Image (cartoon, rainbow, N blue to C red):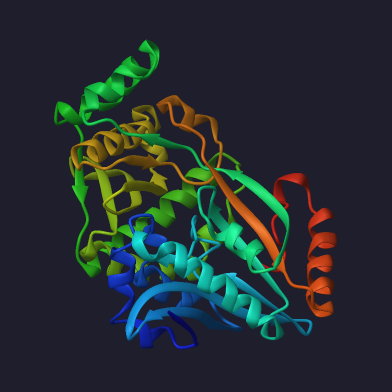
Length: 359
């Protein structure tokens, strides 16, 4: 195997999907569709810095990073993170061990080209951290984030049997109006329909939060986030990597749910609710529907993604750790960069202690 540096994402357009599809652990955040849209909207001031691993001429692995410079210091972050919840090296199971080893070795050989690597949103079961240590790189500032998910059985009844009797009644009650036809789920398709639905999602999100005087992530109300989401989902929905659902009562839209999906899991991402229909509890209804839909699709997980919000635990998920780690080398510049990151991180409130340069 050989590793080459690729700085033009579009040059991998034809090869990336095959590598992604051969990796059962790769989430939709690792797809070419997500990554290319992310670069168009979030990579300003940076350069794609992707380590491509080939066996002969065949692409067998990818480590997609972005290289930025700030204050003369150069740092790498994973492509697609920030708005994306997971990141890891992409490789098929049979190639994974060697690909990860080769990527770690290449990072070690190229330490003159970067000063710090902020490995953000790495699943706890990943072997990437061990490979980086094995390559002689320095790991520190590790933060563990919570990402609950439900391991799904083969039937919805079996899932319900695994939750408390109180929760079982609540979940069944959440689905009653759907099953009776009083409300319906409309699956959104087509570029224009998706654009309209996503614009409506953002308007509902802003209206719901501001009407309650709650702090809203300012990025979610930005034009950039809207344009990115339209761009990404227009490419992902036709490939089965995302699903947009409108919950309707007659012709009225009660709420909009945006999720990502693959052959392994459904990933609950964005919700928007019309406050006029609060009494219908649309959030719980859509989660219950999403769990049942995921079981019917034969998926293994319903993934709530990052955050330990209390509502998630109504559905009996299991916690999974996602790691954020700062990687450096023996070089003086690297030690200075990592040290500065540590100092700035320590100055943040406890709940915000993530790598400053990497966000």
